Every structure is written in C-alpha cells, then in structure tokens.
Image (spheres, rainbow, N blue to C red):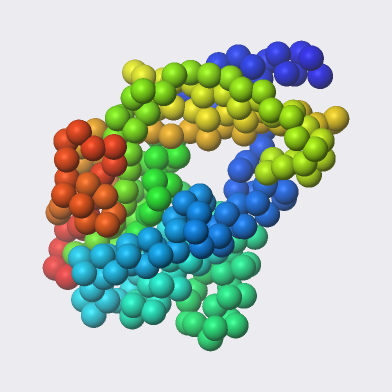
Length: 280
C-alpha cells in the first residue's frame, strides 16, 4: 500500500487518468445526484432558480420556434432538459452517468415529458445534422483533455444542422490565477468519496504553460486505494475561437456569462454562441 500511495503522490503528467472516475463510481455517483437535485446549491448543477434564468436567456438568444431541436450535452438528471422542454424545445439529453440518466428518464416519464435521453460519453456521439441547437453548460467542456475537446467540437458540428448554434461556457486563466498548489489531508467515517472510514488527500496542481489545473483526490480506505483526477483547462478568447473554427463553427457572439453579461477581457468566464456554416 505504501508504494502505491507513494506513486500516487507524485505530480501527475498532464491529463493522466486516475484509477477511478467521478461520474461512474457507484458510491460517488449517489452524492453527485444529490448535489444535482439540491435546488439551492451551486454544485453539480447550479441553483435551480439560476437554471431557470439561464434557460430564459438561451430562449432569447436561440428561440425554440427558430431552433426547435435541442441537444443538451452533460445533461445530468435532466434539470436543464426539463426547463428547456417547458420553454418549447424538442429536447435530447446526453450524459455519461447511468445513475443520472436513469433518474432523468424516470422523472420525464412521471411528468409525461417527451424528452429523449442517452447514457453516453458525448465525445463519442455520432449524430448527423439532427439538431438546431446544442448546449454544453457549467464548464463541462473544460474538463476534457485536448484530443477529446477537438473530437467533441467536431462531433457537435456534425450533429448540428446547417446554421445551427452551439452555446458553451468556459473559464479563462483568471479563474485560478491566485490559487497556489496545495495538499490537504482529511479523515471521515463516511463521506462523499467513500461509504466507509477513509482518509482523503486533496491536491491542487498547476500546469501554467498549458493553462490547466488539476484537482486530485486520493481516497484511502482500509483496502483498495484509488484516485480521481479532475482536469480543468482554461481558455483565452483566441484559443477557443480557433478551436471552434477548426471544428467548423464560427463565433457569432461572446458573452461574459451564460446569463448574457457583457464580455469583459478581464473576466473569469466566457460564454460563446457559435454557429455552423449554412442557412438556418
């Protein structure tokens, strides 16, 4: 166990994978679902009142009568998807978490909402010109390694009809500008990462040349040490615009947030509205 822990405590190579996945771990996914469903907590999903404001703003930028078929990527348990449905969109949601998708499907069935859900990694989706609008909300795109970011944008472009829109939010390097590398040990009888007594080593690493940070969690129960690496890339305006262009999407507008705030060069986040070539 000591050698295993010693190896894990070294600073990982950029985009190195952990031995466990946040979204699919049996125990952790329970806590994530609870966080999604908590209406007054900006955790896995924003506060539900904020979600309603975001959907209202998106509806003003890309109204359902002009962009009826919507693809909600990283949809979780369907909080946004249900609001989009209420706003008049024909909604398809996609998420890698089976627990969240099962909840979303059950909720839609109980409420008699016509929403389609797919349990799938959106890096591997294969739609062809089926959607008028795609959304990628709450900085999920920032968590992808470089090759998966390029693949995802290409797949989104492929999934959009000519003239279709992508609305996506990303962080800028200023988001983590003042945060220093750190390691923090914690002990719990049970908690978010493990149902049994365990120690957690939370580490924060910087990769400034790549504008990337890592939140790492080493979970140490009595048996079966595992670690989770949550990567987060930040973007300059030029970098993300170039990434979109490489995928076949041109930038229509940049906002300072997904609530439609004015873009600011010194801001910590950006919301891009990008369009696929062709007539809508």
